[in-house]
Length: 314
Length: 288
Image 1 (spheres, chains in turn red, cyan):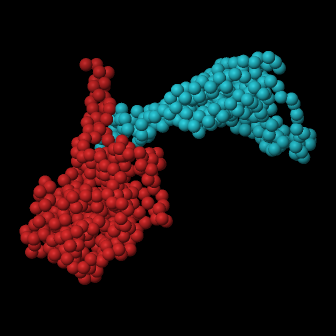
Image 2: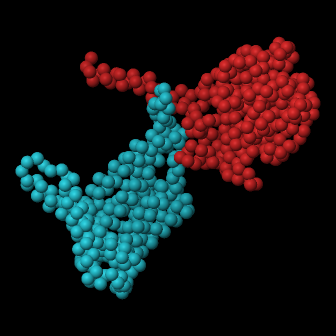
Image 3: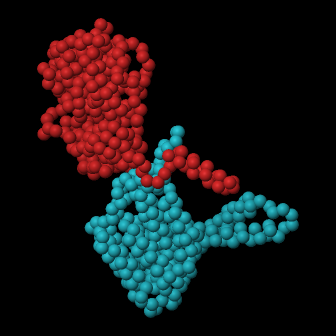
């Protein structure tokens, strides 16, 4: 074989191995897209779950299904179906997106879509919480598919003495029903930084966790629009401006997610007391959590968070 | 590329009108995105150059300057743009190198931008070779006497210094031994430029240019070519602006390539070419 042919063969091999090729390549299955406004209060449209084309990015998927206006060289979504970022009623509003319930850390034009991804674009007020690092609205994601095609290990952390009983066992069973194998441990046990943690128990027992402290620090730190009283027996539900819209007493539950630095999200299935925790566990299902940032539960009725005035429903 | 008076309707038109005509053609390329309209502007500029007797110069300049710019746009845009829905090729995607998707829309956008650059370069080349720069400077001397004088002197001194450099280089080549560095020539030319500038300033002062009194406005009757090119410039500008405002010649590359106008765009392109080239039909009184 001549040297030229050998070089050509090596070049072809390098091209093949480096993922180069003509066309978009193999597509992915079971991808869904949800577009809402006001923290999921109003659905503007959706796609899937269904197959998508090869080399699909989150931006392309949005552009295929909606009228999109971009800025900064096509890397930033300015408007979807005419709803444009800027200011509304003196408050800053813009488009944000979540993949499997995790806020994006890069532009949608450079984020590839992976099989099973649940992509959620929401047009919201970011005056109070510029970052909402994780939401519960993609349940059972991110437990099933993780993020960027990489799955995380799930760990359900329980209050001592309840590892196999009551709410903690119920959460593990519900995750199991969704196809997630979850390890169990005690709250605040060191177990590495690469686990997707689900903390289950009354708030007084969870608030000392580092992610729990974010929630106590308010929505600007955690992206969760609630505030617990000092003794954990009262739960204040906040609106998008961070003001108290409603106060719940004993027996109230909460399902919320936040993220400590760059670690996988931490979920809380909690409440003002044991009854509240049980109520929260009962709400841990796709139908109740879909399209919500977080969910409070009072008298077995879910209350989406932050509290948004009704603008015509979903 | 230098101006030389030729026997053509464009050369016969007054500088202000010829300038407006070239500007209208260039503006049409700047405001339009439709490939048909851009192609019409390019072809009009090249045909006008041929009719004005400067076809070779304009064609050469467009080829040497415009084509590389256009090719650069065509090659670079698909590699840097992340927009477009139709992926035609995947590059990279290994290790820290992110996958780069080349889209048909980015290629189309690059091609249209290249065509636009080509049209603008052709219009500029036509201006440089068919519009008298001295007459253009005279237009502005009433408003900025010193600026017009400075610009006029600069354009002349550049040629004088280039001739100086050529002479010095020839003298250098005649010397025996290894060739001296070009830096020596640059140094000599720069020094002589300062000397010449001092001489020119002294001559201007002696002739009373320091008073900077605005010259009287020269009035000359409009010729048929002045009128024809003025009407042509107005028609070209109106067509381009009207087509843009009326959505007759729109072009969107992203997220999918969309050409607006259909037959309307073709009509605008044809009308623009006709309006631009019509003044060249009258060749009476074009000799100097």
